[in-house]
Amino acid sequence: MLLFSRNVVILALVMGFAVAFSANLGLAQTAEMRRAMKQQQEFQKRLQQQRKEAAENSPTLPTDPQLMGLHKEFITKAEKLAADYEKKKQTAEARQVYEAIVRLVPKYQPAEEGLSRMIAAQSVQDRKLTEVVANRGWQDSGVTLVQGMPVHMEVKGSWKVVVETDAKGVEIPNEIKPKSNDIKLGTLIGVIATSPSELDTEKPFVVAKQLDFINKKTGRLFLKMFDIDPTDNEGKIHVLIQSTFP
Image (cartoon, rainbow, N blue to C red; front, side, top):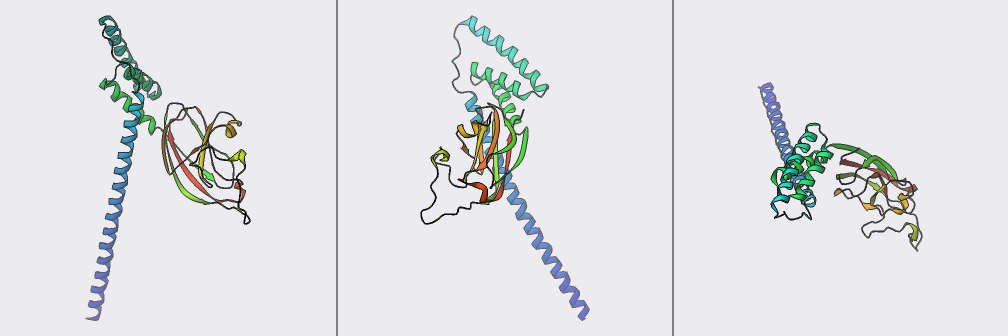
């Protein structure tokens, strides 16, 4: 009888653990689904914004029949060229053609759809996970960003800013004062440079936990913590860079 009771207790405990595990698994799956849905929504918003930017300042269509004929001829040939580029997986070239069509003929659906496909393809084409340590100056991300390409960055981790001072505090020297009010002590900053001298002359930008932008200049991406003297800082941060790399 005692053995029977013991088996019943063990069975009940096992069932209890199974139910709890299933519940936790269900919660984890639900949270993962919510994260996936949120990421998809954010991606769609970025895509719409990029399409809007690509179609800005579009000229109005001509009224002259002969000029309209030239427009149609251009569109026909341009669409064929874009399709050829797509087949060859030359997304950058195909995007340029679709952008030219959209600028010439606003709201032309086939070109808008093609442009959306190319932007989406470029947004996920290349990825690089890089590490930025707190106690060093400018660090090469290993990535060259291309002008006109969408860039997505995500930051994970934390670091410690160590500043030794007396009662007077620490004054930031003029030569290294940040050129943006968003940059604070310990902020992760980036700069796109084509030469070592530009690391000092180019205006740095803040790399937040999540950052999306259309790159305005082809160059190497460098990252660092903003600090007067980084050598006594501790920790590191991981940065995911997503764009089209040459």
